Amino acid sequence: MTGPIPVGMSELKKLEILRLEYNNLSGEIPQQLGGIESLLAVNVSHNRLVGRLPASGVFQSLDASALE
Image (cartoon, rainbow, N blue to C red; front, side, top):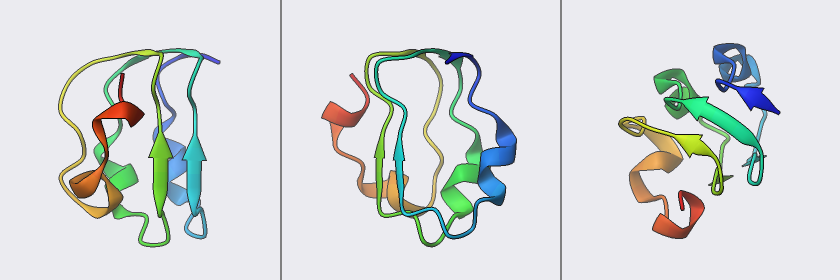
């Protein structure tokens, strides 16, 4: 995958694990992803993401290795 993470992914209300590592994603992680209450784990490492993490949900306790 290339480009930004689609904001529309935040509409996946039953999403539990989001694995997007080893792609060519760029830009910021959409703040709306923090609103997915069912989301338990995220890995977006090995991309070109920048900016602040969403301030809520699983992102509050995200391990740094999921962002490298």
